[in-house]
Image (tube, rainbow, N blue to C red):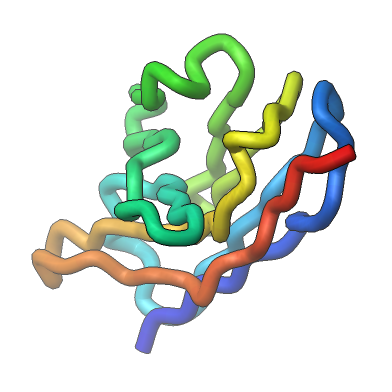
Length: 117
């Protein structure tokens, strides 16, 4: 059984920063990719950033240059440093991990990020 738990969300003013963390437990040795998605009210879920166990990163255009993903696959943890936050970054941010051996994704419950003055 794999569980992912996010932390670090909250309320921040425009231009501010937050750091999200995600820790996975259970059978994590076969994780190939970890990352973050987000979903704003009445919008579809969108990919924010991913990182592979080889350190290759990928970002949505909307966050490129403002967000930085990092991870430690030996500890099954992934982080998202979010700088220069904008109101349109407001969403529930969910951590995920892809297990290549099982051929499936695992998802956390999500953490709310609200950017507002």
